[in-house]
Length: 293
Ligand code: AMP
View 1 (cartoon, rainbow, N blue to C red):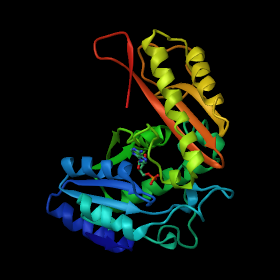
View 2 (view 1 turned 120 degrees about the horizontal axis):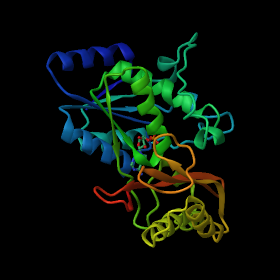
View 3 (view 1 turned 180 degrees about the vertical axis):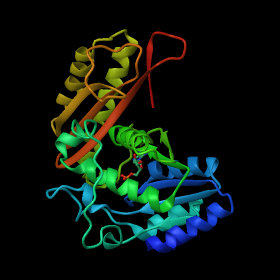
View 4 (view 1 turned 60 degrees about the vertical axis):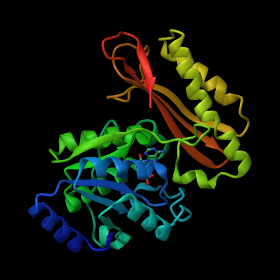
């Protein structure tokens, strides 16, 4: 695997690959890689003849009181994992390569960026959209792979791709989980053993939502209440939000019908903020929604 640090060399590498008619797939990450990231790479390996990954801990998407300085950094291990997974090129620029002095242009996907994660983390999605657009311009991939774990993020990036007529297809991949159902996240390493045990409450809450749906519940408030009840039983958990939203607009819904929706959670376990979700899509040819992924 080739490791590239500069934008100019990355562009030249991509230009050569495109001249050879390679199909490029791209997986942007912030490093501290786990099976969730690797699942995106495996999917890209199937679809594409050149797989590009990036590791860039993007300062623009962290608030002043967030965890940029203590975010886990495991570069050497990441490189091994990416090599084993079959990545062709890793783009790993320094912050001043992406944001040189005098940088002034930001991308903001209005509306979708303001609620939920956007409200709890002001400026977060502006930082995400800006860096992903820059990375798309540098890597020029035909396909880009994102996890459904960050459901609002991928929806915002899809909207950005539509609005700015980007030549990239955004592929949404399933959430990879631990044995007890906790969604893999680089931030899980912040949890001590007691918090790690408590963190399984997110999955228990989503399991309860699934049970309610299977029992015929279609009222969003009832579903939200059932989720909240499970979370409230865990003393180490503090809910930031629980919402049932339309999967396209990310606006709250009052009932679950034919359109896909998400049950979204953000929960503090101790000081660590975790997010998770349940995607609820109508089953093909039926009126009954089924939950998946
Ligand atoms: P990050 O390094 O946190 O920016 O994540 C990079 C990509 O990996 C994003 O598209 C995430 O949605 C995705 N990702 C993170 N955790 C998981 C997971 N547990 N399952 C699937 N994808 C994930």
